[in-house]
Amino acid sequence: MIEVDSRGRRCPLPIIDLAKRMPSVAVGAVVRVLADDPAAGNDIPAWCRMKGQEYLGSPAPDVYEVRRLR
Image 1 (tube, helix red, strand yellow):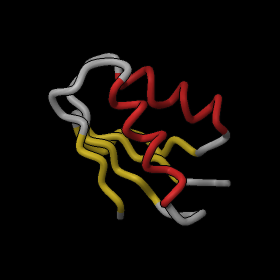
Image 2: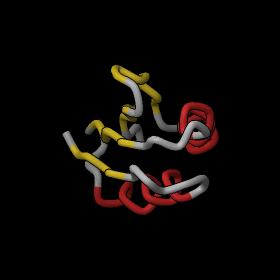
Image 3: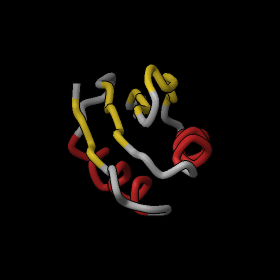
Image 4: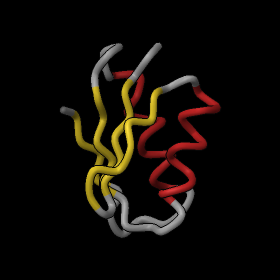
């Protein structure tokens, strides 16, 4: 699993960090985003919908998982 650590970074930086990392992620791979900004809980699923990626959920506080679909 690929991890993007955006703890301590405020909106929109966790989304920017995720977007920058995605081109190097293999299709089908899962990216785990660590983000303690409260906005990430809404921003990451919204970004996934806009970009055609799969939001897998938040298995723990401040942890968000995204599967690259394309």
